[in-house]
Length: 241
Image (cartoon, rainbow, N blue to C red; front, side, top):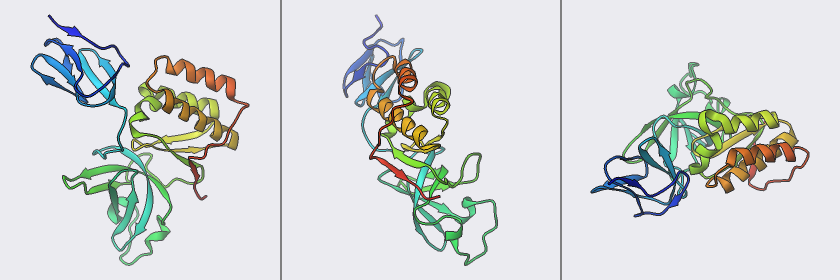
């Protein structure tokens, strides 16, 4: 007889039996052991039809091909730019992937992107040795100007974005800020000072309460009640104009 032992948004630990029987299917963060579906990590249960998935609750960002991420330029050399991607690994942006403009040999590459700049890019290759290549050719991929960068746990990004972008859209509408969410956990916020601070506080609340049900309603209430109330956040970085 088949049985699901967990509910949507339950927190489970590695080795926990999530379901018994062959009517359910293992998804991300789970595996099948005989007739059981078992948790492979500390995570938040997500029931998707007959598939059981887990959203991890710990761990640093692990780069994946096609992820859109926000990165910081840390080095400029003869062939391109080295990027900090908020991961144990760094990435390389080559000249041919940096812009649609032609770059002549020997050009001053800092005129395009300099050390300390933040850029939005897409991962195009991850080797088995974790050598990572990115591109800035694509819609929305660009250098970020103004605003501020904050860092959240990358495993909280799906909750921050919401279904079909609903959560982040709600924050944008309430704060009148432009917000870009990188799948690596870096978030760019650009708007008026009060709007930026409200956006930061809303994001921190989502990060802290992502494992609880009714999150969307609580964030909406928080935005409605706290528009005139702003507090500083020490985890943000203002980036140069």
